[in-house]
Image (cartoon, rainbow, N blue to C red):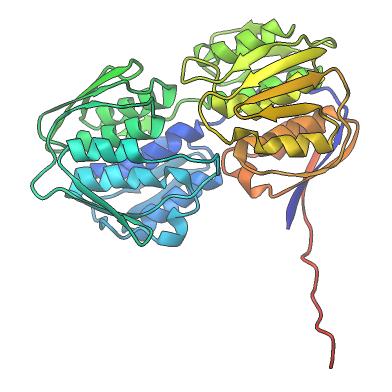
Length: 429
């Protein structure tokens, strides 16, 4: 068993460099399957979701070569569709982007149903709706998605019933090589969707409108390899911003795009935290007296759902009653029970958490119940006096590149340890 152990109560001081965006890296890496050529992807984060993605592609016949710690060369020329290993696909939610990539390249996809963090019901019905509009027949049987275009994929007008990041990305990938024009309305607007569109365009795709709610894709017959650098991770940046505020420290967070952080910065400033924006960095100066706020998570450019658990830790430290409403996923608050172990006073009613703040958190043994919940436990452990032990840290490693090393470099007393599994004995008869 691996654990993160934190002796908290130390203000974070110094600078942290943000890695490439997880939510951009996974679809871009998997979309190289669509290209059928050699691509070099730079600013790749060293996280398990990317490692799983590369392992899946290698098992499908792609040639993977690490050029440096954060640069990978992917040659998908001789890849084979429908060959992704079920046990790997189940380890991550983003594996469903293989469906769009396989459909776009071969007109047929056969992919296991995805895994990843459990936030309650996260259906792929909008993905399926989009694929059907492009001319594919879809069936889901025995744990696999089987998608077939009897002729070839064709352009279509698609209106998503709800804003869906995954659906927007998946349909955009498939439509890049469909015949004719595809128009996606009510599209998601997140920065990683823009990043994927920019990557595909660098390979010869014709995509416009990414970052707005209407995306147009003019299909092309062939795509070509390119060299592309992934954008910085706005959620990693926001996480370290919250860590600085929670420890009453002062952190300069580098390699960021400040515009992507506007909704996070605005709420921190409302709580009394000072934010200094530079061209490619933000400086966060903590405040001893955090103020209560109300927050609702929304699609971009609203406050991100992936920052829900991290901001909740700050609300626990702020004086007064704050209300945190989850507007995206119906089961985001599973982490609340872990914060309660540390003395937090939080009541959850459906999609709303009422947080009575103003009391210091106390160190306790806790666990990560998903990726962002896990890193919230790290922030809570940094803020609490005493020794906090966090289990199930594999969730955290899905999305944070060397979080222990980065935090240690700015003054945190934090380490990752391996606890030997207990030996079981059988009683003799």
